[in-house]
Image 1 (tube, one colour):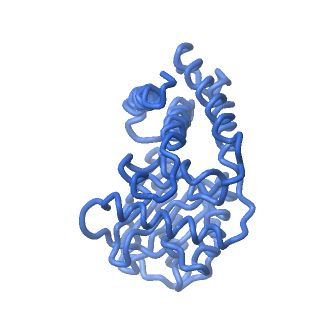
Image 2 (cartoon, rainbow, N blue to C red; image 1 turned 120 degrees about the horizontal axis):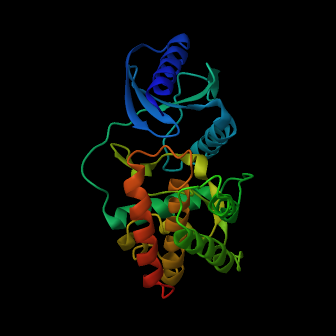
Amino acid sequence: MEPLELHRAVEAGRATASELGLQVDDAIVIHNSDRIALRLVPCDVLARVAPSGHLADAEFEVEVARRLADVDAPVAELERRVEPRVYLRDAFAISLWTYYEPVGSEIAPADYADVFLRHHAALRQIDLDAPHFTDRVAVALREVNDREQSPELPDFDRALLSDTLSGLSAAISSDKAGDQLLHGEPHPGNLLKTSRGPLFVDLATCCRGPIEFDLAHAPQEVGRHYAGADHDLIHRCRALNWAMFSAWRWRRDDQMPDRDHWRVEGLNQLRAALDRCGLG
């Protein structure tokens, strides 16, 4: 978010928590993109604040969290001292979560795979109306093919992204027999190492697809520890994920920090991933 909108979002998060009886002396911005994450102290609550246009996504994320809490999934919990819902204030949608103090170093590949297995097992226990991963690919493809939405994307790279998104999406989704609910974007930034063990966060990306789509977001070593995973499919899903990542970075209104760097890096990673699965 730009500075003015960021200030308003922080104040909306602070005021919402305070009115719900939580003590808020300070708000620390942990993450700033199209939505922000705030650590509120001393109540130690994590507030997720997004423009109200993202209300449906915020409500979906809260519903996913509520369902997964009922089956003891390894995910971050909603704040228990307030009603588990999305609050609206000053054109922002606000949800309140438990804050977890990070502990230790990065998560070992075997432990990453173990929490994946437990999370996927929990997801199989809930019934949720979630989009298929191909729906998200279709959104990215529309952004790539619409020059008004991605005016700075060079023609050569536009063709690469368009061909990759359409071709790999169709190939990966041709057999839906093994599809299930997934996290959707379980990259290392969305897996916290806490005193309770590894916990997944950012649940708004929940979708349906093969488990390899999730595994492709993790470091390559993780898939080797996940029993029954199709490693060729992981490679194809990783290429597709980089294509989607790159599509978002070339959007006219993308707000990811250091966007120019990630525009170049995303395309480089995509080409490397395509080479690994013989599609370069």
